[in-house]
Amino acid sequence: MSSDDDDINFLGFPSDPVGTDMVANKKRKLGEDGRKEDESKYKIFSKPGYKRMYPDNCTNGEFPVYVEGLKQDDKIGNKNPLLLSKIFKQVKGIHESRRLKANKIMLVFKQASAANDFLKHSCLEENSMKAYIPASSVEAIGVVRYIPKETSNKDLFHKLTADAEIITVRRFMKKEQDELVPLTTISVTFVGTVLPQYIYLDNWRYKVFKYVPPLMQCYKCLKFNHSAKICRSEQVCSKCNGKHNYKECTSEIVKCSNCQGDHFAISKLCPIKIEKQEIHKNKNNSNKTYASLLVKNNDFPSLPQRSQNVPIVQSNKIKNKPSGQSLPIIVNDSIENIVNNSKLIDAVVKTLIALGNSNQIKTSAHIREELLKNLSSS
Image (cartoon, rainbow, N blue to C red; front, side):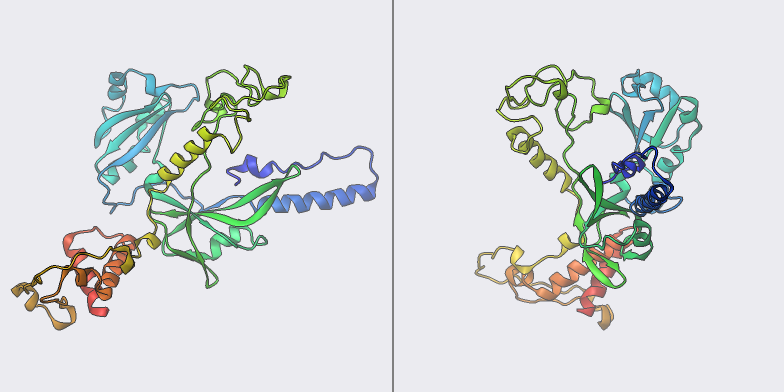
């Protein structure tokens, strides 16, 4: 999938021939215009003016903000923590600070407004730093399949609708003979940390799947979870495990640098890579989708029969409620029947989905009101 403008431009177009006649030049010009049109068509399209911020009514317990140096070699995480505390002394609302790695630290706030205000604090510019909210805290990425290749990302952005706000549309691309070919799969970035179950394109409904980014493998040291751009280790050959680039390798021996097996270090068959991919997949499957909230009765195992039924006594508080909002009471029924009550389960599911879509603060009164409403409509 193309991730930035550099990827979009990497199409492997041939350079202009020299000494061609005017007709050839005209044909070439038309071809170049067509390619430029394709480049623009599949360029990542994001909501104009969008800035990553925490919603004012967000109910998260913590609001992390990442801080890095403006220069690539600025190891802010290795600096004296007391010196950093002095720099951030005038910043309001910092609950705690953490070192993430050599070039990154994290400041944790207890209020969304304090975290948002810090993004434009004067101490950042004065000390050549930049601050940003991690995408995983306020955004979720979904994958949608079978989207027409002829439609540009810009058109998709304006035509797609969902229960959550859409901020970015990307087209997955496949490299064929040094050119990037568009696929029918796209990724869509939504505001919020829970994916909508479906997305709509002119009333055509498409299922939204969880996006799991590919496992990152360094092509310098051949280890995982970082890129060659920031790698400080020695160059390792992906063929023979020698201390040189694979392009310079003359050895007939094939040896993986990770598991010492007789395959290339980038091979999909490497047991170490397979293990890392499984860990990576499980780690990225932590986010919930609305679809995962749909509960089926057979998700609950059958409970053992009880010798006595457990009565549920109706309180005076519920008795005085209007009939339209009264909570159905199951008297002299077993716990198993409660669990298998489809109306009750459906009402709970509807309530969970409604709460996930709502920007209101989730108080007990709000949750109870939503549940009563769904029970009365069942």
